[in-house]
Length: 328
Image (cartoon, rainbow, N blue to C red):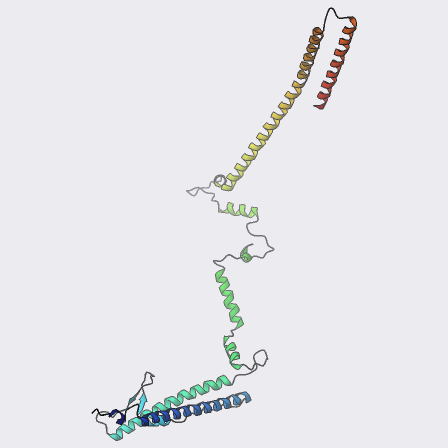
Protein backbone atom coordinates (compact mmCIF):
# COMPACT_ATOMS: atom_id res chain seq x y z
CA UNK A 1 0.00 0.00 0.00
CA UNK A 2 1.63 3.28 -1.16
CA UNK A 3 2.16 6.05 1.35
CA UNK A 4 1.08 9.64 0.37
CA UNK A 5 3.63 11.63 2.33
CA UNK A 6 4.09 14.61 -0.07
CA UNK A 7 1.05 16.41 1.25
CA UNK A 8 2.39 16.18 4.77
CA UNK A 9 5.67 17.99 3.97
CA UNK A 10 5.97 21.66 5.00
CA UNK A 11 7.89 22.60 1.87
CA UNK A 12 5.21 21.25 -0.49
CA UNK A 13 4.11 24.10 -2.78
CA UNK A 14 0.66 22.61 -3.15
CA UNK A 15 0.09 22.50 0.57
CA UNK A 16 -3.01 24.61 1.48
CA UNK A 17 -1.11 26.43 4.20
CA UNK A 18 1.68 27.36 1.80
CA UNK A 19 -0.80 28.53 -0.84
CA UNK A 20 -2.60 30.70 1.69
CA UNK A 21 0.70 32.18 2.92
CA UNK A 22 1.75 33.05 -0.66
CA UNK A 23 -1.57 34.79 -1.25
CA UNK A 24 -1.21 36.78 1.96
CA UNK A 25 2.33 37.82 0.99
CA UNK A 26 1.17 38.94 -2.47
CA UNK A 27 -1.66 41.00 -1.00
CA UNK A 28 0.68 42.61 1.53
CA UNK A 29 3.25 43.45 -1.16
CA UNK A 30 0.55 44.97 -3.34
CA UNK A 31 -0.72 47.07 -0.44
CA UNK A 32 2.82 48.29 0.32
CA UNK A 33 3.35 49.27 -3.35
CA UNK A 34 0.08 51.20 -3.45
CA UNK A 35 0.93 53.00 -0.22
CA UNK A 36 4.42 53.87 -1.51
CA UNK A 37 2.99 55.18 -4.79
CA UNK A 38 0.44 57.33 -2.92
CA UNK A 39 3.13 58.74 -0.63
CA UNK A 40 5.43 59.56 -3.59
CA UNK A 41 2.60 61.34 -5.38
CA UNK A 42 1.88 63.44 -2.31
CA UNK A 43 5.55 64.36 -1.90
CA UNK A 44 5.85 65.21 -5.60
CA UNK A 45 2.71 67.37 -5.48
CA UNK A 46 4.04 69.20 -2.41
CA UNK A 47 7.37 69.89 -4.11
CA UNK A 48 5.63 71.25 -7.24
CA UNK A 49 3.46 73.57 -5.16
CA UNK A 50 6.55 74.91 -3.36
CA UNK A 51 8.36 75.44 -6.68
CA UNK A 52 5.40 77.38 -8.12
CA UNK A 53 5.19 79.50 -4.96
CA UNK A 54 8.92 80.22 -5.11
CA UNK A 55 9.56 78.69 -1.70
CA UNK A 56 12.53 76.64 -0.63
CA UNK A 57 12.16 73.00 -1.57
CA UNK A 58 13.28 70.68 1.26
CA UNK A 59 15.22 67.53 0.76
CA UNK A 60 12.92 64.66 -0.20
CA UNK A 61 12.41 62.32 2.78
CA UNK A 62 13.92 58.89 2.77
CA UNK A 63 11.59 55.96 2.13
CA UNK A 64 10.41 54.18 5.30
CA UNK A 65 12.36 51.08 6.25
CA UNK A 66 10.88 47.88 4.96
CA UNK A 67 10.25 44.94 7.23
CA UNK A 68 11.87 42.66 4.74
CA UNK A 69 14.92 44.90 4.71
CA UNK A 70 15.04 44.67 8.51
CA UNK A 71 14.99 40.94 8.26
CA UNK A 72 17.85 40.99 5.77
CA UNK A 73 20.00 43.29 7.86
CA UNK A 74 22.71 40.70 7.88
CA UNK A 75 23.10 41.06 4.12
CA UNK A 76 24.69 43.78 2.02
CA UNK A 77 24.92 44.63 -1.66
CA UNK A 78 27.91 43.70 -3.76
CA UNK A 79 30.23 46.42 -5.06
CA UNK A 80 29.27 45.80 -8.70
CA UNK A 81 25.74 47.12 -8.10
CA UNK A 82 23.93 43.87 -8.74
CA UNK A 83 20.70 42.95 -6.88
CA UNK A 84 22.20 39.97 -5.12
CA UNK A 85 23.12 40.00 -1.43
CA UNK A 86 25.68 37.98 0.48
CA UNK A 87 25.60 37.04 4.11
CA UNK A 88 28.19 38.73 6.29
CA UNK A 89 30.20 36.25 8.27
CA UNK A 90 32.65 36.44 11.11
CA UNK A 91 36.28 36.58 10.11
CA UNK A 92 38.92 34.19 11.30
CA UNK A 93 40.05 34.99 14.86
CA UNK A 94 37.19 37.41 15.41
CA UNK A 95 34.72 37.14 18.25
CA UNK A 96 31.11 38.29 18.30
CA UNK A 97 31.93 41.75 19.69
CA UNK A 98 34.51 42.53 17.00
CA UNK A 99 32.13 41.26 14.36
CA UNK A 100 29.32 43.56 15.53
CA UNK A 101 31.68 46.55 15.69
CA UNK A 102 32.89 45.87 12.15
CA UNK A 103 29.31 45.53 10.90
CA UNK A 104 28.36 48.84 12.56
CA UNK A 105 31.31 50.66 10.97
CA UNK A 106 30.45 49.26 7.54
CA UNK A 107 26.82 50.27 7.93
CA UNK A 108 27.83 53.79 9.04
CA UNK A 109 30.16 54.22 6.07
CA UNK A 110 27.48 52.97 3.70
CA UNK A 111 24.89 55.32 5.20
CA UNK A 112 27.29 58.30 4.94
CA UNK A 113 27.90 57.55 1.26
CA UNK A 114 24.19 57.31 0.58
CA UNK A 115 23.51 60.53 2.51
CA UNK A 116 26.19 62.38 0.52
CA UNK A 117 24.73 61.11 -2.76
CA UNK A 118 21.22 62.16 -1.79
CA UNK A 119 22.40 65.61 -0.68
CA UNK A 120 24.21 66.15 -3.98
CA UNK A 121 21.12 65.09 -5.90
CA UNK A 122 18.86 67.38 -3.88
CA UNK A 123 21.21 70.36 -4.29
CA UNK A 124 21.27 69.82 -8.01
CA UNK A 125 17.49 69.67 -8.12
CA UNK A 126 17.28 72.85 -6.05
CA UNK A 127 19.61 74.64 -8.44
CA UNK A 128 17.53 73.46 -11.37
CA UNK A 129 14.36 74.54 -9.57
CA UNK A 130 15.62 78.04 -8.65
CA UNK A 131 15.95 79.29 -12.22
CA UNK A 132 14.97 82.83 -13.01
CA UNK A 133 11.73 82.98 -14.97
CA UNK A 134 12.82 86.20 -16.72
CA UNK A 135 15.23 85.72 -19.60
CA UNK A 136 17.91 88.10 -20.86
CA UNK A 137 15.42 89.89 -23.14
CA UNK A 138 13.04 90.65 -20.24
CA UNK A 139 10.39 88.10 -21.20
CA UNK A 140 8.75 85.79 -18.66
CA UNK A 141 9.24 82.12 -19.39
CA UNK A 142 7.49 79.53 -17.22
CA UNK A 143 9.35 76.64 -18.82
CA UNK A 144 12.45 76.92 -16.70
CA UNK A 145 14.08 73.72 -17.89
CA UNK A 146 13.84 74.70 -21.52
CA UNK A 147 15.15 78.17 -20.72
CA UNK A 148 18.09 76.70 -18.81
CA UNK A 149 18.89 74.44 -21.76
CA UNK A 150 18.70 77.40 -24.14
CA UNK A 151 20.99 79.47 -21.93
CA UNK A 152 23.52 76.69 -21.93
CA UNK A 153 23.25 76.45 -25.71
CA UNK A 154 23.73 80.20 -26.18
CA UNK A 155 27.20 81.31 -27.22
CA UNK A 156 29.11 84.54 -27.18
CA UNK A 157 28.28 86.40 -30.41
CA UNK A 158 31.61 88.24 -30.48
CA UNK A 159 33.56 85.01 -30.11
CA UNK A 160 31.41 83.38 -32.78
CA UNK A 161 32.01 86.29 -35.19
CA UNK A 162 35.77 86.16 -34.58
CA UNK A 163 35.84 82.40 -35.15
CA UNK A 164 33.81 82.76 -38.37
CA UNK A 165 36.20 85.48 -39.58
CA UNK A 166 39.24 83.28 -38.97
CA UNK A 167 37.55 80.33 -40.66
CA UNK A 168 36.71 82.42 -43.75
CA UNK A 169 40.27 83.77 -43.92
CA UNK A 170 41.55 80.20 -43.86
CA UNK A 171 39.09 79.08 -46.54
CA UNK A 172 40.01 82.03 -48.79
CA UNK A 173 43.48 80.54 -49.17
CA UNK A 174 42.19 77.55 -51.13
CA UNK A 175 38.60 78.46 -52.09
CA UNK A 176 37.44 80.51 -55.10
CA UNK A 177 34.32 82.59 -54.43
CA UNK A 178 32.05 84.51 -56.78
CA UNK A 179 32.48 87.56 -54.57
CA UNK A 180 36.21 87.55 -55.41
CA UNK A 181 35.66 87.32 -59.17
CA UNK A 182 37.01 90.86 -59.71
CA UNK A 183 40.04 90.08 -57.55
CA UNK A 184 40.82 89.04 -54.00
CA UNK A 185 39.86 91.79 -51.52
CA UNK A 186 38.85 94.08 -54.41
CA UNK A 187 35.55 95.89 -54.73
CA UNK A 188 33.15 95.41 -57.62
CA UNK A 189 33.52 98.98 -58.92
CA UNK A 190 37.27 98.68 -59.41
CA UNK A 191 38.70 97.26 -62.60
CA UNK A 192 40.29 93.81 -62.25
CA UNK A 193 44.03 93.40 -62.55
CA UNK A 194 43.77 91.51 -65.86
CA UNK A 195 41.61 94.09 -67.70
CA UNK A 196 44.43 96.51 -68.60
CA UNK A 197 46.61 95.39 -71.50
CA UNK A 198 49.24 98.00 -70.65
CA UNK A 199 49.70 96.58 -67.16
CA UNK A 200 49.99 93.08 -68.57
CA UNK A 201 52.59 94.15 -71.12
CA UNK A 202 54.53 96.04 -68.47
CA UNK A 203 54.43 93.04 -66.14
CA UNK A 204 55.57 90.69 -68.89
CA UNK A 205 58.34 93.09 -69.92
CA UNK A 206 59.59 93.34 -66.35
CA UNK A 207 59.76 89.58 -66.11
CA UNK A 208 61.79 89.22 -69.31
CA UNK A 209 65.56 89.12 -68.74
CA UNK A 210 67.74 91.59 -70.66
CA UNK A 211 71.04 89.72 -70.24
CA UNK A 212 72.47 86.62 -71.84
CA UNK A 213 73.41 83.40 -70.07
CA UNK A 214 76.79 84.82 -69.05
CA UNK A 215 75.28 87.94 -67.51
CA UNK A 216 76.25 90.34 -70.30
CA UNK A 217 73.86 93.03 -71.50
CA UNK A 218 71.77 91.86 -74.45
CA UNK A 219 69.31 94.56 -75.59
CA UNK A 220 67.80 92.33 -78.30
CA UNK A 221 67.01 89.45 -75.97
CA UNK A 222 63.67 90.89 -74.91
CA UNK A 223 62.71 91.31 -78.56
CA UNK A 224 63.67 87.71 -79.31
CA UNK A 225 61.78 86.50 -76.25
CA UNK A 226 58.72 88.44 -77.34
CA UNK A 227 58.88 86.95 -80.85
CA UNK A 228 59.35 83.47 -79.42
CA UNK A 229 56.35 83.92 -77.12
CA UNK A 230 54.22 85.19 -80.01
CA UNK A 231 55.31 82.25 -82.16
CA UNK A 232 54.47 79.74 -79.42
CA UNK A 233 51.24 81.46 -78.44
CA UNK A 234 48.29 79.25 -79.46
CA UNK A 235 45.98 82.26 -79.55
CA UNK A 236 48.26 83.99 -82.07
CA UNK A 237 48.27 80.82 -84.21
CA UNK A 238 44.47 80.71 -84.08
CA UNK A 239 44.25 84.35 -85.11
CA UNK A 240 46.66 83.76 -88.02
CA UNK A 241 44.60 80.76 -89.15
CA UNK A 242 41.41 82.82 -88.98
CA UNK A 243 43.02 85.56 -91.07
CA UNK A 244 44.13 82.95 -93.65
CA UNK A 245 40.61 81.53 -93.88
CA UNK A 246 39.14 84.99 -94.38
CA UNK A 247 41.70 85.75 -97.10
CA UNK A 248 40.90 82.50 -98.94
CA UNK A 249 37.17 83.24 -98.77
CA UNK A 250 37.73 86.76 -100.09
CA UNK A 251 39.82 85.50 -103.03
CA UNK A 252 37.26 82.80 -103.84
CA UNK A 253 34.47 85.37 -103.83
CA UNK A 254 36.47 87.67 -106.10
CA UNK A 255 37.17 84.79 -108.51
CA UNK A 256 33.45 83.92 -108.67
CA UNK A 257 32.55 87.55 -109.38
CA UNK A 258 35.12 87.69 -112.22
CA UNK A 259 33.74 84.49 -113.73
CA UNK A 260 30.17 85.80 -113.61
CA UNK A 261 31.28 89.04 -115.20
CA UNK A 262 33.00 87.15 -118.05
CA UNK A 263 29.93 84.99 -118.65
CA UNK A 264 27.70 88.07 -118.85
CA UNK A 265 30.05 89.71 -121.35
CA UNK A 266 30.15 86.53 -123.44
CA UNK A 267 26.35 86.32 -123.48
CA UNK A 268 26.07 89.93 -124.58
CA UNK A 269 28.61 89.32 -127.35
CA UNK A 270 26.81 86.18 -128.58
CA UNK A 271 23.35 87.77 -128.71
CA UNK A 272 23.80 89.93 -131.96
CA UNK A 273 25.40 87.00 -133.78
CA UNK A 274 22.52 84.73 -132.91
CA UNK A 275 20.00 87.34 -134.06
CA UNK A 276 21.81 87.88 -137.40
CA UNK A 277 22.03 84.12 -137.95
CA UNK A 278 18.27 83.69 -137.43
CA UNK A 279 17.55 86.58 -139.77
CA UNK A 280 19.66 85.03 -142.51
CA UNK A 281 17.94 81.68 -141.95
CA UNK A 282 14.50 83.31 -142.34
CA UNK A 283 15.54 85.06 -145.54
CA UNK A 284 16.82 81.83 -147.06
CA UNK A 285 13.55 80.10 -146.11
CA UNK A 286 11.56 82.89 -147.84
CA UNK A 287 13.63 82.60 -150.95
CA UNK A 288 13.09 78.86 -151.02
CA UNK A 289 9.34 79.31 -150.59
CA UNK A 290 9.22 81.80 -153.37
CA UNK A 291 11.06 79.43 -155.68
CA UNK A 292 8.86 76.54 -154.72
CA UNK A 293 5.69 78.41 -155.67
CA UNK A 294 7.21 79.81 -158.85
CA UNK A 295 5.56 78.56 -162.01
CA UNK A 296 5.92 79.70 -165.59
CA UNK A 297 2.26 78.92 -166.31
CA UNK A 298 0.95 80.98 -163.37
CA UNK A 299 -0.83 84.20 -164.22
CA UNK A 300 0.28 87.58 -163.03
CA UNK A 301 -2.61 87.74 -160.57
CA UNK A 302 -1.63 84.54 -158.77
CA UNK A 303 1.95 85.64 -158.67
CA UNK A 304 0.89 88.91 -157.05
CA UNK A 305 -1.14 87.01 -154.37
CA UNK A 306 1.81 84.80 -153.57
CA UNK A 307 4.03 87.81 -153.14
CA UNK A 308 1.56 89.56 -150.82
CA UNK A 309 1.22 86.44 -148.69
CA UNK A 310 4.97 86.00 -148.44
CA UNK A 311 5.39 89.65 -147.53
CA UNK A 312 2.75 89.35 -144.82
CA UNK A 313 4.44 86.26 -143.36
CA UNK A 314 7.82 87.92 -143.38
CA UNK A 315 6.47 90.99 -141.54
CA UNK A 316 4.76 88.77 -139.00
CA UNK A 317 7.97 86.83 -138.36
CA UNK A 318 10.06 89.97 -138.04
CA UNK A 319 7.64 91.51 -135.52
CA UNK A 320 7.65 88.25 -133.57
CA UNK A 321 11.46 88.21 -133.47
CA UNK A 322 11.60 91.80 -132.29
CA UNK A 323 9.11 91.07 -129.52
CA UNK A 324 11.18 88.11 -128.35
CA UNK A 325 14.35 90.19 -128.36
CA UNK A 326 12.66 92.86 -126.26
CA UNK A 327 11.42 90.25 -123.81
CA UNK A 328 14.94 88.95 -123.36
